[in-house]
Image 1 (cartoon, rainbow, N blue to C red):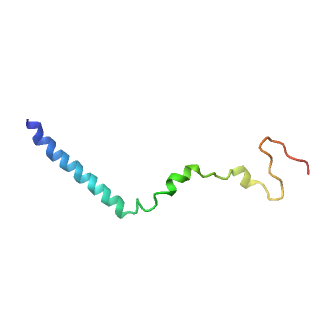
Image 2 (image 1 turned 180 degrees about the horizontal axis):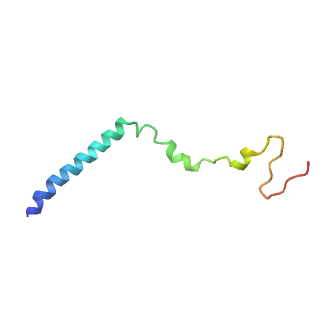
Image 3 (image 1 turned 45 degrees about the vertical axis):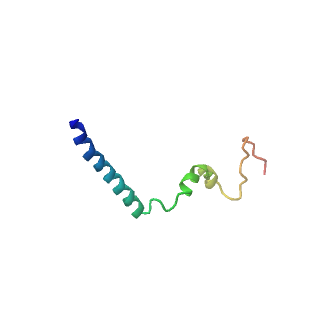
Length: 69
């Protein structure tokens, strides 16, 4: 029965910390953009090799065949 005397204040402290963290996150704009972080892994990135090629050379096909000039 004495454990209740410890658990009730500990529970109130955990709830107070959770409320404090929520308000900190809300004040620091953590909830402003909820859509784009979920879409970022789905977006295609440009390959570094494609960006390094000069514009006048044709890109090689995905099967590795490059047409002659």
